[in-house]
Each structure stands twice: as C-alpha cells, then as structure tokens.
Length: 206
Image 1 (cartoon, rainbow, N blue to C red):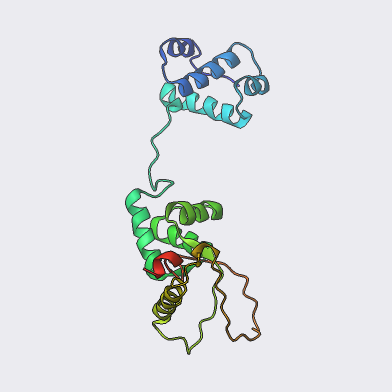
Image 2 (cartoon, helix red, strand yellow):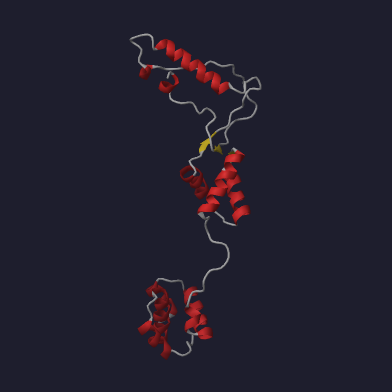
C-alpha cells in the first residue's frame, strides 16, 4: 500500500494533541517506515480493516480525513425530559411488558435499547413493579381495598384491648373461593402501582 505525502505524517505527529488522531498518524507512519499492516494492527490493537480505512482517508483527504466527523441524527439515549414523558405514558397505560416498552421507545423516540436495559429503566429508574397479573372477580366491589382496610383496622383495634397483644407476632390469613384456570398464568407484566397498596398493619389501627 502506497501512502501519499508521507513526509507530512511526522510533522502532524509532532504537533497533534488529540490522542485518537495521533494513533492514526503513528500507525500510518510506521507502515511508511516498512511495518506490515498485520504487524501494525497487532501493535496498535486495531483491526486491519480499520488501518485500510485510515489509509484511504489519508490518501483522499489528508489530515482532515483522519479527523472524526461529528455525529448527526438521533442520540443513542433518551433525555431526562423524554424519560419523564415515557414514565407518564406508562403510568396511564398501567400494565405492560418489557417488549411493549422497548417498541414504544423505538416508535416515539427512535432509540433502540436492549431488553435488559429497558427492564433496568423500569425497575431502577421508574421504580415500577414486575409481577404476574391475577383475575379479579366481577363480584369484587369497587371499594374492596377500603373495606379490607377498615375491617383490618377494626380487628386490630379489638386485639389491642388485650394487654398481652403484640402486633409483631400477628399473622393474618385469607380464605377465598378458588377454581381451576384453563390458561397458565406465567407471563409477568410491569405496573407503576401495586394492586393492594395497604399501609403497614400498625398504621391500620391508628
């Protein structure tokens, strides 16, 4: 391979401050001094294909060809404002899978995150919950959580009248009607809220 204007390489090397550009200049200069491309690739820890690219850039545009061009187009990650917009959309959506969110990010913001990274965003950044959904009975009253809270409060209030009562040793069990389901419940979904956001038992009695 014939490198044009080899005398300019050492001049640029002497004054270059950008380490990335300097490595390109040094690599091309060593080849000009007789080193084989395969040996240069091993010395500078770069693929041979990269060295051939540098060679073409130098021969076509000189020093300017080795200067990295500024990236244009869509950034590789979401901005804080976009994260907040995504979070609000998911809160309104209520239930979704990791795949749903990955596709939503691609369609809305043009950013392609891997599944693991999407899951980390949902869990660590948004503090969402990952769980299996369950079927709610049509007979379940709309205020079921409030009713349960009230009954727990009343029950604990009665128990507190016993001087030997210790809430730390209290265990509560629930009995409910059950029936077999035709479809297995194995898929986990993300949600911004828990379905039973009850306060601690101690606060129920206050």
